[in-house]
Image (cartoon, rainbow, N blue to C red):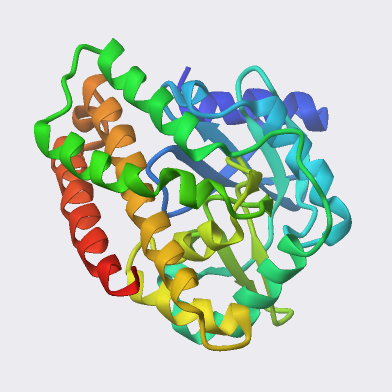
Length: 295
């Protein structure tokens, strides 16, 4: 089935309408994992998510649904979810007009982003799952190996140097985190607030991990957000955690990019995932070297 056929079929069943009454208005920009569509039906607007190829190897939909229900009282995601199919990952949500921060100015939103993350991190809510970064990384590495790819020596070099900080990083308290709090997942809505969407990776983790995610496109945004989030000048160990977690994220997404290359997504999406994977190694090395000034 084409994406249009999937959207029409699932939405028509959900709304008890004929397929021809379901209209795809637009495809939302951003993201390399999922396809998200704006859909009009019965004079109302919705968003519809279709997960990317083999997305199930990275995301547990039962956990995603649990996280969304857990944060519902916080209203930081607008409580937009209408239906989530745990098997297919298809998700129907209320549509909200807004601007992703990736196409706005993330630096102009430090105050509101920090306030939202405070609401999440200080909520006292505890997920049933931990994000478990190092267990996750080992799993991602295994996915790559199962597809017949071999990691380059340059990957093991930076990973092993980073791992010297593993126990130190795991020694900090954890809270409920988004774990993919990059600017593309923050939406500025006309009511004058931010929403944080896409909770596929939610779980307990070091809160500074979320701050590091804000530097996904440009690490300077993470550097700018940290003192605003802390409401003071960061201590040496807080700067070090920021740099190290962003280094980790580059190692993590290196493996994801390699896996996508292995399953043929470079050709399907017209993106060179091997080149993207190498870029993450280069970034990891640069960040780790810069972290030395905080050791």
